[in-house]
Image (cartoon, rainbow, N blue to C red):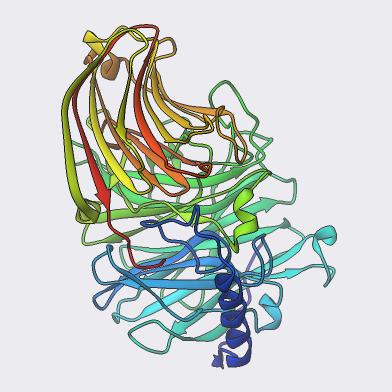
Length: 518
């Protein structure tokens, strides 16, 4: 794409309209007053009420962690987007903050869409986000009109901000209306921005802009175009450097690909979030060295955003309820974020995403079950009623013969459960929801490498919240995040073996504290 010169921004101070924010707060409060907590998370971030999606504006600023998120405060389905906000000093105890952004400007009148936060050379923070309008002024039948916007916080607590207006307009003749989700970083003495674009011929791309002052941005090039012509948009792009085990710098490009078709175990969700590892030099295009790989193999993972704090690359994802039925829509809230994960490169050169070390601080107590052996088709109850727990277990694959074995979580008296299991016939860890009474079903499968299989051991960390499960395989080499809507009554956890025996070397169960958002 050539010939695009963005207009110079016309900056001005536009204070957030207090009336719009007050209405949004009232909307969330009304939803929260009627909220059903049967599946409301105890240790995951969710809105007090209403619908949420993408994590936004992630940062550590002046002693506090800040997580913003896309919020529709007036209903449990997607609608005009606002920015919700929670903060913490330790990533363990969170408090609700005032809604940060509501649609108040012409360029964003139909939604304050996703974006990121970055701390400038002066130590001050800036928000970059997408302003959204329906092109026909009414609905999505005429497509979108999306532009990039700038805002600056009014205080160190980030509880309100001043909007500075549009900094990059959309060249509508070169874009098929998708043009959103800016990510900003600095390399050398230059600031860069990338965001997702659907080109005029409907190819998913990420464009690259540069700036010296973080305000005036110049178009440089297409940073990356997805090789699959079915992929028409790359939502929520991410881009950051990372060191491999030998100290070599690689670049990870992340995006949520819209339009990819299912193929075997890959791309089973409506849209799929993944990454490639490669190289990049300022001014050039990204050069991938790997194929597209999923960030998370579960049913419900999308729109991750990462940020760097003191050398740690930390990422949150949105647990997206992709398809109906979505029973939580009836409960006054809908959507939650994953646990925060730290991104590293493993010895094999692939990405590892493990829960940040701080998460161990959520453990309230520990029940050590030691080693367990189950005979043919054996079963053992690990917990009679577990709504919020973490389980650490090591399976001795070499000493086990079961075709499938693992944990039935949210197991209720009506026979419903979600199954977290190792499937020996396919050499994968699966989350199987075929026995669930609520929500959509199906199963998802995370691959193990030949080296992992040959090791004869399998380490699993399984986080069970009231309505979800996150499974970390071998320290986060793979992850599966899925909703699990338990039936009424006690929610047991059972260790099971199918068609063979199971040897578990160790199994610990930790009860988890609340993060304070209930």
